Image (cartoon, rainbow over all chains, first blue to last red; front, side, top):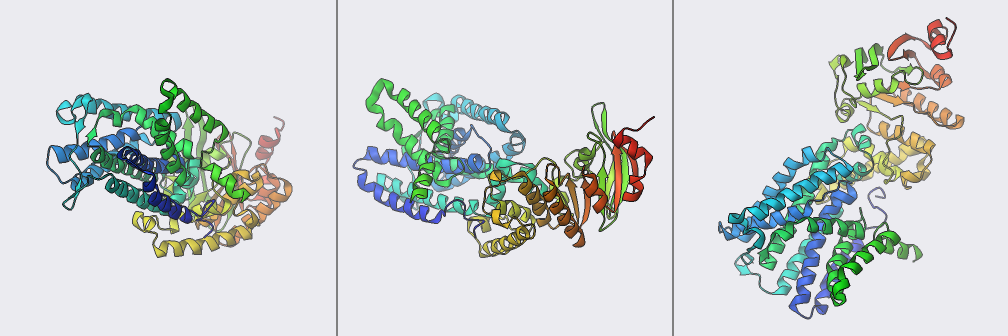
Amino acid sequence: MRALARRWNLRPALGVTALILALVPWMLSNDFYYEIAILALFNAMIAVGLNLLMGYAGQISLAHGAFAGLGGYIAAILTGRYGLAPLFSIAVSLGIMALLAYGLARPILRLRGHYLAMATLGVGIIVSIILNNEEELTGGTDGMSVESFSLFGHTFTESWEWYLLAALHLLVLLWLAQNLIESPLGRILRSLHDSERAPASVGVNVARYKSLVFVISVVVAALAGSLYAFFSGFISPQEAGFNRSIELVVMVVLGGMGRLYGAVIGAVILTLLPQLLTSFEDYQTLIYGAIIIGVMIFMPKGIVSLFDRWRRRG
Amino acid sequence: MLEIRNLTKRFGGLTAVDDISFRVAKGHIHAVIGPNGAGKTTLVNTISGVYRSDGGSVWLDGADITDTPTDQLVYRGICRTFQNLEICGGMTVLENVMLGFDRYLSKGLWPTLLRSRRLLEDERRYTERAMHLLGLIGIRDYAHQEARNLSYGILKKLEIVRALATGPELLLLDEPVAGLNPRETAEVAELIRTIVADEVTVILIEHDMRMVMDLSDRITVMHFGKKLAEGTPEEIRNDPEVIEAYLGGRR
């Protein structure tokens, strides 16, 4: 099994994560804290999906904010305007996003490196423009309100209910992602990162697996985006903007590319950091940037590499 | 087994492979030699579907396989190695070999996500086979090291092992001993002999004359994209045109 177990066994990490997620609510004394924690969990989901694409398969995307936002919009519009049940509207939204991602994947993923970055950037901007201009459907720049989320007749109103829902989603996602990484399919994805000729020479249809991982990461982003839209009860084009896409990429890079829990750590830290820095007022963005630069200089393999050092010593 | 008919590949005004034809018999080692820039690697790339041909055809056991993509050729029993290594540096040696077994392993999304028993069972079985292959070529000790940290010689061998893992009937080796020291070269030569004994046919692109003369059943000589000569090592050794192309004889 050594071929599958990579660097360190991921299984205990899932248990530790579950434990932490179970303990965190004791520290959440009010709804505002809950709100940040829930946002961190949804961000972590998107980052884990994006990490499969970026960190493992080595394909950059500057459009995942747009995909998450668009997924949220579609679910919101289906419930708000067409009266679909939230669960059903999310399912339809994910289906649409999967088809969209599949359609985009073939032409876009032929490109590599900077060219791929430019192409995805373009996609993100197009989505942003559509969301801003289709006022009839989306409410334009002001955004739109989203119906409350109900599941089997039960409406989610309490913060802890949302926290539980988000935490369960993240844990299941981590488990599935871990199974994916530690499999022949995962090995193909990692091989794409280093050389496309190598997998092709042993019979791998490279384009097919690039498309697959792209679709997976987009669907995960759209799922988190849809749930978040229902949670916050409001969605605006900012949720799908360029800054949002960049923020997600930074989460993956800062946490540790190609490391499953790196994305989680990156997402949590980048969600909390602005909140922790609010007391610095005018200097908030400056300090935020300085911390990111510092981490990248001293931990180029991401924050998760701290655990490696600690483990080697222990 | 393999027949190449009038194969041509042009890059702009340059005809890198010019009307090349030859047949490779089953179980043979067929060498393609020629000075630098003769078009040997272009020939391999055109046969193996990396480049699209501009004329001619490639036949495998009577079936036309001209311009079949590299990955599909693997399923027809043709695998290649690269002159400049194509190894996944971020993966371990073992993982690189396991990648070679890819065609035998399940990549279904649901078995993968739910970690099906069969998937794990296959993975264990093929891991054993991979370790066995690594043992044969003497790089088993490096199995769990990241490929990017290893020496060129080990990676050259690794690439051949990975190609063997696909279970090929025809192996295209593009300069397998380029950059290796004499001892490593001898080891690779020995490996190629073993491969052929296992009834794999080999097309060998190589510079190392002594190795080519020792190993080959037949040799095709290329010069400026054209076929200059073809024959047994003995015939090629004594061919005046070949001697002139290689040694720059008198006119």
